[in-house]
Amino acid sequence: MRLPRPQSTLGAIVELLAIVAFAVGLALLIQAFVVKPYVIPSGSMIPTLEKGQRVLVERVSYHFTDPKIGDIVVFHPPEGAQTERCGDSGSQPPAGQVCIETASEHESDNFIKRIVATPGDTLKIVDGHAIVNGEQIDDSFTEPCGGGSRCNFPKEVTIPDDHYFMMGDNRGSSDDSRFWGPVPRDWIIGEAFATYWPPDRIGIF
Image 1 (tube, rainbow, N blue to C red):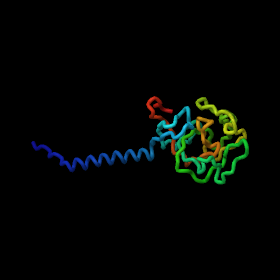
Image 2: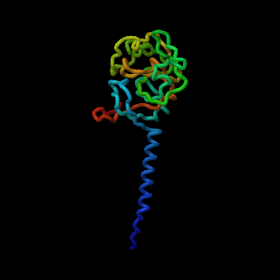
Image 3: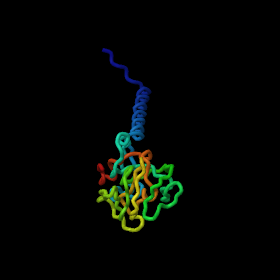
Image 4: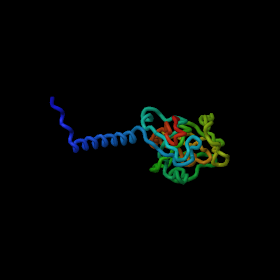
């Protein structure tokens, strides 16, 4: 019986490199189209998410279903969000009203917030609570807003078609749609569905 010839060292190396290349390519493909990790950059989502915490964001479901109130999403914010600019002009909305104009372009940075209102919903903010279509949505998991002009926007607005209104769970310390407007659906990257770091906070949302 003839035994198979041992594989050459060069052949083994080529085969190993091919396996590694396939694994790397598969990992990049998954990150690009399926699931991607993100690091929480600020305290705007306390107590749900702490600064430095790591989450997994899936990028598939919104191709088949609409985002909904309560979803925690990663998205590109409008240009000027870092300076709380409302719309392209930067003109401030009337007193007591959230920003409802959105800049025509988005920034390259990523934000993570919670959706509190969807296209066509009416919205006002009272003591940091989102009143949607006349009823306060569930926000028992949020930090109190603390009062003041950043917490009260009693003039009701209607969310534009194909736009989503975002707020951080840390209502008194969140830079969000109240100041730079609702986010077009095309700018939403995906929904955060799990946290994997630190170990004591591992879980599914």
